[in-house]
Amino acid sequence: MKVQLWDRKNNTTISAEVLPAMTAEQLVHTEGRWQKLRVRARKRRRRVGVPVPEHDRWNWDEKSHDLKFTAYRCLGIRYDDEAQGLMMISVLAVQGRAKAYIGKPVLYIKYIESAPWNLKAYAGEEARFGGVGVSLIRGRHRG
Image (tube, rainbow, N blue to C red):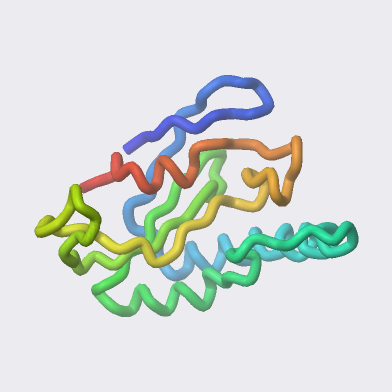
């Protein structure tokens, strides 16, 4: 399945691949890549007195242990052989509480994060792709 992301640098859209079932090994690899960038960004933000996002302390390596349970699944978006975003969901449907979803089954998003190089909070004007989180949430990856 493919989704469209906004290439901020070229002001165009690109077609990225949805990964419907990330493995624990893929999460460990992704965390290794992302953590290095998070640490640099955290230091830079602290120097100028800017708070860091909540997900700054997340560790997808640790979160990969949830995949041992059939209740969880992790999806990703890949472009240029690199994970651009991750989302872990509970596949156990619960009843929706929002008015439009009362009585209907919904899935719970446990964690969602874009790669650090896609976030203006980290990369500033050099942020690469927009729409990663939205593409994960929209659910155009069913299957």
